[in-house]
Image (cartoon, rainbow, N blue to C red; front, side, top):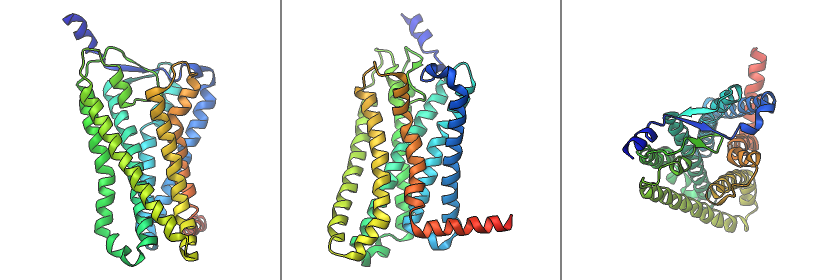
Length: 315
């Protein structure tokens, strides 16, 4: 028995089985994935640079939008480069340590996105419902703290999850996904392992982000109530809150759908559908956030056009 456990604990490479059905479409898939990743990098970097370069955009709403774009680049970089390499390779494997790192990036990206969207909803609530107190509550110091904790909390939760997962002994090396997810790695653990601490941290994390959802719902309840009686507030709501609400609903629906599938999904679903469910939030949110929220804002759109014309004339 000890010999078996010793052999099992020596698993250092995991296989990703999500690409097995697409060997005949590798070139098309590689090209479309590369174009998608380049598009994500281009539009997010364009928005970040515009916000950084223009001092008139150094306001909480735009700074938070820039943070959302930075987080989008961070999360997609944790997936797309490895996925592109897998498309060029005949064996789809990842080292155990690399798998833990990728799981950390995927989880922290998703949670940070929700945290930043929550801060954005709080910012819109103050701007519309408490305009006289807005600059008092959303000063640079408080904004810096909110942004800091938007990344610190998810990173801390995921660091604990990865530490707990890394102590487990694995009995299988096959991951039925395109990328590594912490809970999927936990499911590979041998029955002799105690995974209760992992479950506790996962449920605690879910509780924290359910609270984020409640905070967002509460802020929008007050926003709708406030905007009903004022044409100016309604205009402000349509310009800044509707894009934010659209981004948030897209992101939350895709992430919740993926989580629900991991927990309760049927194993008889086609692999292509499983792959789509797994990566939809890595395609839609990083593209739609800057497009819907950033480029729809007149001030940001005008600045991007201005800098584009300056660059074109300079070239």
